[in-house]
Amino acid sequence: MPRKSVPLAKQYGQELALAVEAVLEGEMRKLEPRLKTAYSEVNIEFENPPSKEELNQMLVKESGYIRNWALEMIRKYEKGERILNSYPYPVQFWQLGDQSVVALGGEPVVDYAIRLKKIFGPELFVMGYSNDVMAYIPTVEILREGGYEGHTSQMAFGLPAKWKESIEPTIMREVIILAEQLGIKAKSK
Image 1 (cartoon, rainbow, N blue to C red):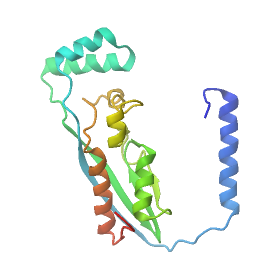
Image 2 (tube, rainbow, N blue to C red; image 1 turned 180 degrees about the vertical axis):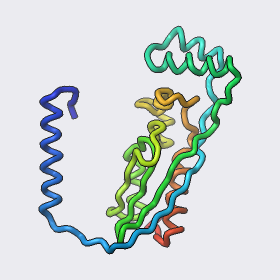
Image 3 (cartoon, one colour; image 1 turned 30 degrees about the vertical axis):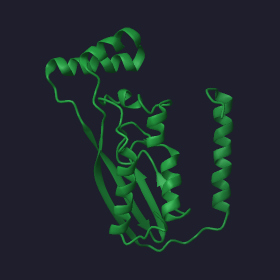
């Protein structure tokens, strides 16, 4: 959708307001006053960070946040600071009455919601930006394709490298484990 103008922001705000009103005027499903939750953090791993030589090459070729990131990485190397090889990623599963909710950290791509709904059913509610915001959370496919933020969003957050392809199966497996802890059965795997 087109963006970056005040009239479009107003239009989208009105569309959102109408959608909220439609939901509020529609038939609501009563949820039992019962809450079950499960939370964990799984380590999602980074690829090997660039060498100091590669970072120096980036200083010549890049600008903006990528160049700033390369400068910061060089500083860490020079000070002998520890470079992370993984990140503690938050995963949470809630059961509100009979409504299941999955809360994922960072900015997960929509593919996570689509795949989780296939596993747990179309009523599942999937949220991103939950419990931590550390970067864009791509799928294996996006990592392989490159492109939009799959390789670079971590730089904006000061993380050392792109995610390993194990990111998606690690996250998906943890959601299933948490659901099982709550007694929630997958409809399919």
